[in-house]
Image 1 (cartoon, helix red, strand yellow):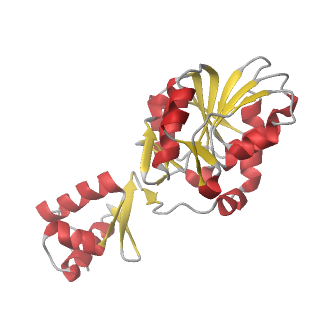
Image 2 (cartoon, rainbow, N blue to C red; image 1 turned 90 degrees about the horizontal axis):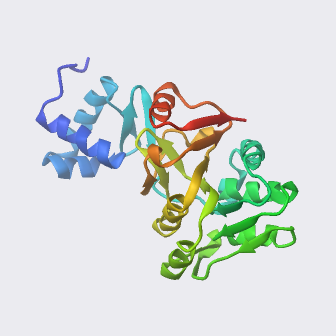
Image 3 (tube, rainbow, N blue to C red; image 1 turned 120 degrees about the vertical axis):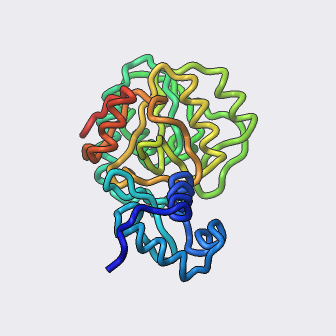
Length: 261
């Protein structure tokens, strides 16, 4: 049976690194602590026995209050993300559309959930929509809404626009609501895969009276390369399933209005 003694300095160092990064490989643990990979695996096994982390193939990930935090190292393709939990995303988009009133100026972020929201905006009177989401702009082109797309560089298959020109143009607008897509939500905040898209998300959030995050429940406990902002930076989270207890408490503490479809 594994020893359940309190973690020593080396294991405490492992937990501090894991808390900051979310995921560590066995090799990274060994290099950071100056031990062999065999010893690193033994440390991870003991820490998992105490439920301080969750071992994975080749490494370990964070656990907080009994909830595993999963680090998404790579960005799935747009089509793969669109198929994932698609019914929930449609329901979330419909609920988010109810927050919009005719005459509003809204920011529409990139992502699969925000694309679904674009499909739901056709019946909401006349709006002014600013978006760096080219798929959403194309959907809204035949609507009665005024659609504004900033200049900049197009990011590959994501079909998002980003860059210094994009950022400068968006800073010239003010929004009634900014609708933001994310790759994950944890007690630490909001996360996304792309540094380029994240810069634009932050500007949308800074320029909006109300920030609404669209997040299906599969993204709870997930984090990725870039932190978009803290939970305190948003006003409303629209989701299909209520968050787990520890995340729900963090959202309440941050003053976030959680709306379940």
